Length: 290
Length: 319
Image (cartoon, rainbow over all chains, first blue to last red; front, side, top):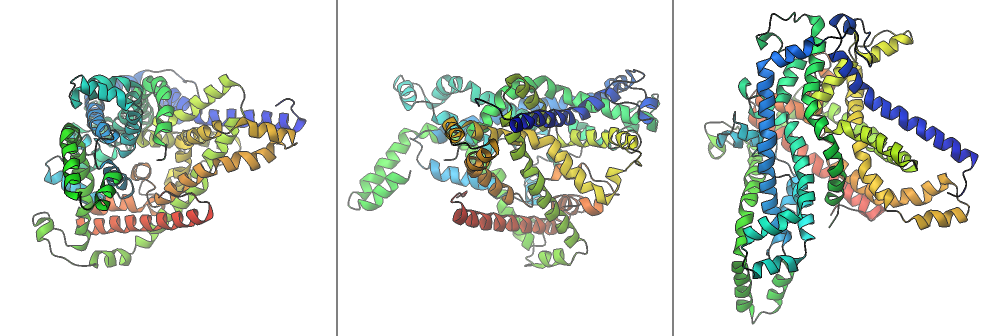
């Protein structure tokens, strides 16, 4: 680009205008939700709240923070995110490692068999019946075990493991390391960036888990946050929170909903800087076609 | 794995010793197989067992009798499915959403990536990208909460803005005619930025010499886009398009279910949500499975047709 013609300049200006406009469109719904969660019911109802709180109030957050069932759901989501992601990583790494080693006879066949599960997914009902037979319905295991390994993440991790030089692994074997020890002390420490990427993919999925809980969890005491949130959004949950003293009029419902949305989003917002650092990298490894 | 097996079949006289060698080799690295066991068990149990379980679509499945004892009924459930008064409408909704998804959600990231690629200012680009990627990490429940909020007829910001232009408030979620636009729009909002990542990577991989050479030849920017950029993106576009076709019937359960209400159900009921209702709420296990099998078969059919066409036309294919 030695010189810019007039048409080119016009294009660049338009481009910046379009992109800025789109970015603002992306941002405005967030800002609106934040503003509403701090505005009085009257102001929300009159449609006065845009991107700044009107008649500032903290009442919705007080309501949300005083609601035990929301905290319980929050705790369950933290549990399935932390413990579930641990299971995800352990299961994925322990399968990705053998599949990355040339000594593993039959790895191509197994890879194809696994790839097939990405194309053919079982219908809902046989999955549900399986969970029933395994007595996993209404347990938090039902939110962690059936999703323990995602084929996509498995391939990401495998591709990364393949790049570790075989000499390194052979030398640790010669030094008398068992395979488990090699995986634990050589391969995993070398793969920290890949593990972080995959771990972050898994934890976002676990945190956002809604469908599986809808299918497998009937016990309200075991609802994860997304199901609880959904219940609040369709107004069902507002009356049985034991918080009737709060004037849960139709007016304040919207504000409470916005506050809950924010509470459920905060962990993601806190994680976002890390997310952004890793996910692009992960997308790239995952899309390598072999 | 392929090489030793071929070697075995070719060298017939030494077959026995060769096989012994492979077994010995496998025995030497038995720890690897041991480590892989839990993962293999996972795919067997949670992926392939339910896939085999699809046979209940041809039975009158009974919870107490199980798969082995339940009576076989052939294609009865499939016939029932096509006779159901709502089925064609649900199928139409599914196909329409799939079509809109390809028309808008598939093409938008390509355009956006091309626009982002023209930005030279690094800081600006970083900020914009950060904003574009963020919504992808929100669950559909939260996305629906946000959209229900901003589209609310009384207090939603969209209707407030419409009011500035003297328009009457629209109840977007309460009318059949708007729900598909809301579904496609919320999907775009959440995922359009995320979709650009893979294209931006492909764009970064284009050799800059090509642009310089065409500059010298006097090609304008538009000409370069048509003759260099798009052809370079074509393989990525083709592969992603094929994958999208494979997902044509899988618009997604969550993203539709969270927007459904009795007022918009006529246009928002798709196969996935119907399967959930028929199967888990009304307990018609075999019937719901039959619909699931139908969906998978159509999906498989679509992806193989698209793959064949693409192989002939562009040389790109999934398999």
